Every structure is written in structure tokens, then in C-alpha cells.
Length: 422
Image (cartoon, rainbow, N blue to C red; front, side, top):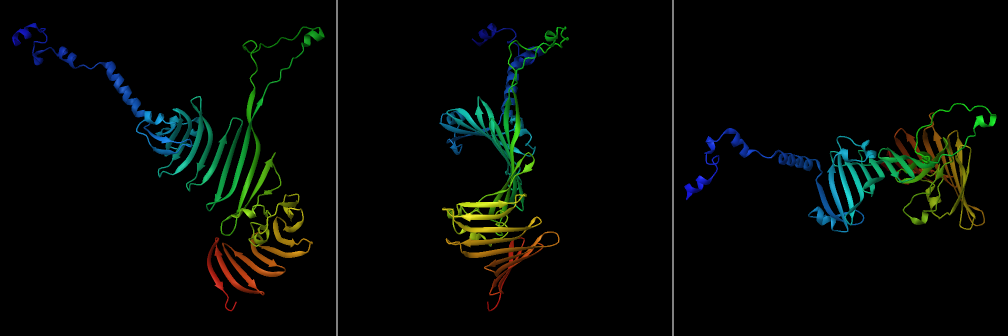
């Protein structure tokens, strides 16, 4: 039976493999070229696509718990897709911030299976964030909303916000890890529509032949003129942050720039952890120089403060009023050149009599560096501070004698002496 079946086989297959012609053996093992190209292309695409992790999320974009697959994740109301991408997949606005050492973490929030928000995080080799940017998804494309940049200490150094008709940029500056200044620029998008004017025919009025006109650019018939749009700076201001000896924020000064000129300084209320002190308004030139007046100024809620300034925007006087408009206290600042020489505080009772007087006197060296501060209450010296380089010596007095002497170096207390018998 086996011989009969072999007789019915084609002659080419009846020949042993080693005796077949070479071209016929090669034809048996040849793989279709189209299939090979498809497999290689599929492998290349799979390697270029970022590996994505999926999480069940909420409306705020928090990753609650992992999802087993993309299909399962998209079945939920909200889900989050995370992946590491290359710089070629970044929006054009973020390309300038990218560095080759950064790793880009991309997160996309989905609602009902459709992407609604996207976030990019640039991380350094240690995993620290150097930039965070967010965008909304509109018609399938990201629309940038904000950019935040950080330095090596993870402190915010730049913040940008975007909207359809306004953009803002704030730069932050630090000294010894403390925020000392910020500059904010705001730009607004203006749309200028062209004004259509009809010029009379000069030749028709004079009876002369009109001059030869240059051929106009070819444009579609009845095509409307395109409106011109440009971004213009609409405001710019600088915030100065002042701190106490213990490095707690004392107040913030804001200076506006308009047309290259600086407007008078606006000082914000003192920042304290007690809500009852929120209305206490502190002199912009006295509050951050000494803690001596804080007890007097922030002990009672003060709804209204009236300032008197000079041509340079410096505060000469400030009067504090209660809710009924009665004067309850006032600060007088005395200036020598561009340095404040003294700050005097007087509080009054309902009859207008003086309840308390406080005085701060400042001394300066030949280079206008402050080297001395003296504090008086009702004419009696209670405290003094001498500055020599980076070291300060603070002395407290009682009955005209020193009872406590404290030494500070670069804002840190290094020694304290209590006088015997005091």
C-alpha cells in the first residue's frame, strides 16, 4: 500500500531531499518577503511607542489603584494613563525647557473614555521635579494652561499661566533659601480690525489723466481683511518679601510699573496666625526693621489706616482709626537721605490723651549700613541692637541697666548672658 501511494506522488517529491536540485530546496524554506516586512515594522512601532500604565482615577486626576488593562480602565468614569515619553512628543511651548538629562513623565486624565487633561513632569537623574506643565484637551489637541519651573532646591523659580486672551509670567528670586523678590508680567491679546477707507480718484477731480497704478496683490473677490492680533504688556509689578529675625514672613511690598515709572508702594497687612490681627496694618518702612512695634500695632483690630507719603513714595506718617473713625494711634517716620532715622508711635484713648509712646532710633555707618537700633517706651530705653558684620548683639534693659545680653550670628542665636543680680 505504501509503494502504491508513493507511485502517485509527484516525481519531484519522490526524490530524496539531499538529491533534489538546490533551487528547489531553497524554494521550500523561503519566507514571504511581505510578511517579513510587516513583522519588522510591527516590532519597530512597538519599540517606539511608550509603555503606558493605567489607573482608576477620580475627577481630580488621582491614581486610586492600578487597572489590569487599558480597556478595563477606559470603562470607568475616570482613569489615568501614565507613560515615559521622548521630547519629540512634547508641545512646542515646552521644547525650550527640555534638557537631555531629563526624563519626561506624561499623565493623561480620561473622562468617559475621552482625554480631558494632560500633565508633563520633567525629572532629573535623582527623580526631582524640574518642570511641571498642564493642559486641557480640546478637539483632541492639548491647550497649555500653566508651566511651573523649580531649581535644584525644589523651590519654584518661574510660573506661567495661559488663557485665550491673557498670559502671565512670574519669576521668583531667593537668598539663602528665602524668597526675597518676585516679578510678575501680564500680557493681554489685542485684536485690531483694519479700517476700510475709500480714497477719491485724484484724476477725476482735476480733470487730468490719473497716474498709473501699481498692480494690486491678487486676492479672492470679496475676501474680508484679516484682523491683526498681538500681545501687549498690560501690567508689571514687583513684590518684596520681608522677614523677622526668626525668618517668619513679616510683610509684602508691591511696586507697580506703568510706562517705565514706579507708582507708590502698597504694603499688605501683617501676616500672623491669629485671625483677629488680620486688619492690623503695619508701616511698610518700620515693620520689617524691628519687632519692637508689633505688640503695639497688632494687639487691636484696626479697620482703617491713612498714609502720608512724599514725592518718592516713602511713608511719612500713618494714622490708625477704629471702626467709628476715631484716631487711636499714629506712626511718624523720619528720613535722612534714603535711610529711615526714627519711627515714633503714639496711641490715644477716647478723649485724645496719649496712652503710650514708643520710639525706634537707627544708626548707620559711613556706608549707610545700619549698625545700631534703640527702642524706647515712654522715653525709657528698653532694648538695643548693635551690628558688626554678620553678628548682632542684643541687650535688654531694666531701670537703665543691662539685664540680658544675646549674641546672634547670621540670624542664629549663639550665646546668651544673664547679668547677675538682675
